[in-house]
Image 1 (cartoon, rainbow, N blue to C red):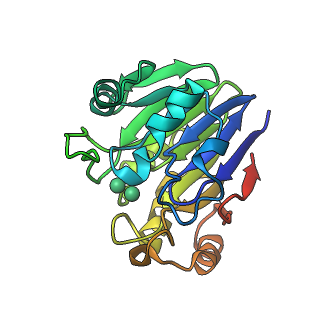
Image 2: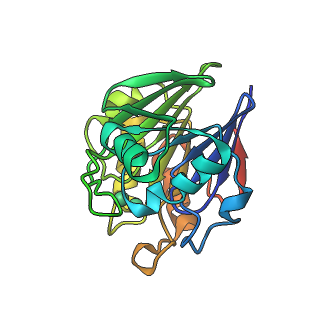
Image 3: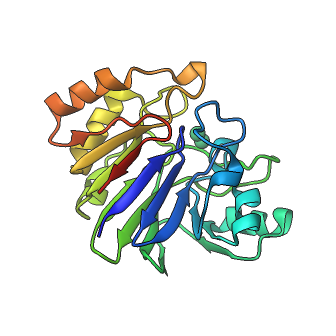
Length: 229
Ligand code: NI
Ligand code: MN
């Protein structure tokens, strides 16, 4: 079974897993790299890493239009229900998970912050692990620096890791190399760069270092670009 993944720019990804449409951190309005508009995305499930506006993004509008289930930490799910009227929300917490039609989703730790767009408390930031029904394991790190427990996450056997490389708000290219050596994924895709001036990076140069200094295969996507696993 293949997983098809499309980069929406920044930390946003649209995945098709065994026919199920899954969005991660769908930030399209206000994202200069977004390959298409909010109206074009489909979703059965939306997964959120943390509460910042560049990750919550267009979740309320997309969830309302598509009826998607939104999975996030408890504080964000309560906020989406109370502030935006979303009914189909699942709030979990770090280390916990939930079974969904395409597999199991767990939240990992991330070292970052998580305030919500209106200033409300957004709980702790997270990374996202997806264990598909077909046995593939994906890790979307959210916004974070490298941390030693990435080695434990790597023990899950990561097929695809998606890591921020932008620096400034998250780890930059050098720390992302260290993260890859802890996570030991088969394939790595960079995210959270070039959206704003402060996070401008040369992803091609970074990919050369990944190929030289790690065992992972780097895949650099253009916004709107796809990868099949
Ligand atoms: Ni953030
Ligand atoms: Mn961010």
